[in-house]
Image (cartoon, rainbow, N blue to C red; front, side, top):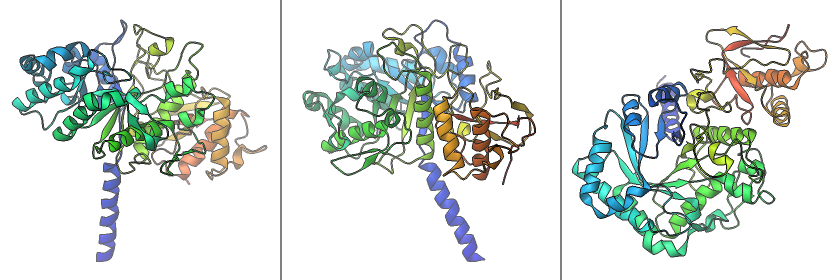
Length: 470
């Protein structure tokens, strides 16, 4: 009896470790638009989706007030245009921290301050020299108010600050920035116990190299992977290779003890003619697979024990952003709070408990090819194929579920009880659900590369009965 208790304790202990090692998914809440809902409505939306972390690009009073007592942590930003003032005047930083941090903390869970955004990038500019000095004065202000142990200071760098990123093991910073900016920044992060913020967009690499970079590799889909010629590690996604290139660049400067957080990553749902890969399907695949990867996987090949922590860009489509069409189409939601596409955004979403947005209560959409869903049944959930998914992706999911996945697909064969309606969505829904139920509805088992969603409503396809367990 004692050995059994010890075994049970060991399982619980190991489970606790696994949970603690999970990564986190936050969202960038940009507001370069004239049609967004007010901050209090945005907080309601975030909570309904199980989102516990946001990042903003300023320290807006209305936003910070709305986030108070919400349980949502936030990264605020000292804008680029204020870096010079902060770098050259400690009293400016003292006043800024008092007015924009201390005024709201701890009711508003401010966890970090981003000093500028992508000031450290491909080229040195007039503002670059202010980044590290501004980090130091803001840190000094936090120390004065005894907030430095709870609020970290960092700066989001663009991945273009790397001089080399392929293979990942050969990652290195641009030589002209190493001594003047990179090493002082990394030294500050080490001394203060902070972490590097980095913005990573595989979309740009794919867009510019679509003939040589696999789309599946870019979207976290099944692919053979790419073996790093320097260390022999196999990468199954461009995102992980880019993150590890940053780790390698830090390691080359002997800062391999530092952690990093991906403060921006995403994929546009629309773009101009020349923006190869910008589409709603690809955006859903990238962000959906990213969430699943972060919440159910370990770290990167180079840093398998370091959780992946990311912030998706962005919460809304922002209609006043300048530049190509893609810039206005990174949003997960339209300004009316309806989804641009349906993906999980949290562990809650992976488990099928993510609420629909308040203005889109029919988000768990009926399958409309000859069948659908009926009234909700308490305590039961089913896995359904999305009617908006690409036929090719649905077929891949169906083939996997019925093959390697071990789903019971007999009923959707000719003359089977669930063969009709004879449509890809209906057959995929049955197969997905069979797989989901056989897996005991565990987290991540209703995903199928973003083509599936969990429904609390009993499926209705004529005389076909969807199983609720095996």
